[in-house]
Image 1 (tube, one colour):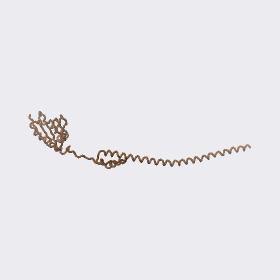
Image 2: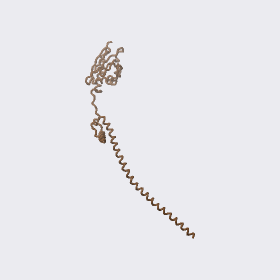
Image 3: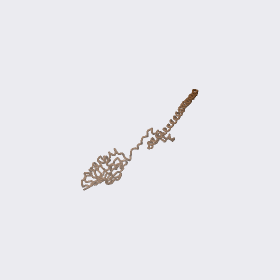
Image 4: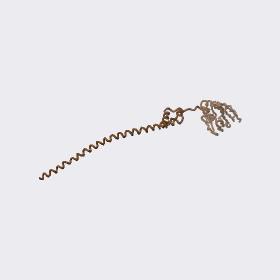
Length: 253
């Protein structure tokens, strides 16, 4: 059986490494071509593409440079062996020049697959990468986090003043670096402990001695006066007992 071959070249608006990984990933391959694909990105693993119309096996995986695979469709004769597909990736600035070498095609099918490569792969990939995936060589600008609120800045300035040290510069706080939120959390705990310790001893020490010293002598004075008065009254009663024996000798006469 005679064999045929074809060659397809195109430019895709994406970096070679991005296109390489998208080709051997099931989700990205399905999205960029429009047909369901199932790919295990390992050498010797089988794959399917375009809803099972294409089947094959990964033979060589050269990161960002080349993918070689055995390849056949459901239109191949049953006794025909798999064809060979080599996909080469060449960097062109922010784009990739893709070269597809498809060999060992059954006789009479080369023209059919050449058109299929353009309609089912090249054109859909151009649309997909131009809309959805950015070029990793031109990443988006770095996002600067917003500065913390004003309350945190005031707390940071109060904390060093309480210790008697100079306040740190406010530039790191405005830039939104990582140390600023950690300082804001520790600073409010220190000033809160100092005012609580100062007022506690003052009210307890002043009122305690004043009321205790004044009422003590007033209560003890009236207790002694009534105890001294009844003592002489009880001692004067035995006086009439002595007059009774004076009358008895008068009766004997």
